[in-house]
Amino acid sequence: MSSNPLVFLVCHGSRDPDYQQALADLLARVQQQLAPQPVELAQLEGQPLTLAEQIQGRLAAWLGAGRSPDQVVLLSLFMGEGSHVEEDLPAAVKQVQARWPRLPIRLTPPIGQHPALLDLLVARILAPQPSCSATLRQSGERADAWIVLGHGSRLPGFAAQLQAGIQALEQRLPGIRLHVAFAAQPPTLEAAVIHCLRLGQYRLRVLPFFLFPGGLLRALQEQAQRLQREWPLLQITVEPPLWRDPQLVQAIQETLQTACLTWK
Image (cartoon, rainbow, N blue to C red; front, side, top):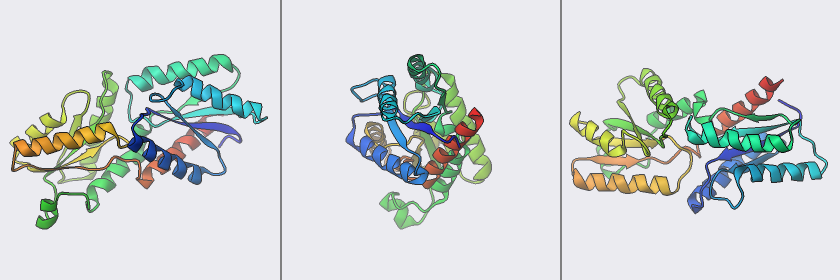
């Protein structure tokens, strides 16, 4: 690893307190895992300063304290190649680079592309599910199908990545039925549920392919409750997002190591 990088975890951001609490917990676990390597945080939205201003402020503080990083690594906590990754993050890098043109600045691929994230999904699907519905617990039966739900994007790369991930999961999970849905593009959760019902799959679990709780998770839970009221035979559970899983910290550590080594 580079001897003196300045590392930022870069995420979407939100004013939601559940999001911020989960983000703070993840940051603390990453800092503990990577100690003594310092790790900062920068958020694209929900902050009074822009992403570039947050990074510039912390970098200026480092330089003002006499600490001179040999590179800056922006470790992307996004899940795929959506507009934020393809447009907003490179624009912020360009702004920071313009102020310090001789300082190498590296933006990593989205964390959702790391192979450990597929391992994480496999572990989630195969593990006992304490959060499942009372009916499923009492029956002792497994879900008929899983719906992996990503945020989605107007750019095609995000959906293609998740679809490819589902195909890879199917190879590793024979006999387990998997479907994909998105919050911001088709197929929606409702469309995926209707598709499952037509296939005779009534016991469903929704596995979010995003990191943090907040408004999106609550909206999914409310939608699942509404769908269950509309189809009384439907049993549907929305699982927690991925921020607590140990494989996520592993993926972050390996992404940082790769970024620092390949820079040389």
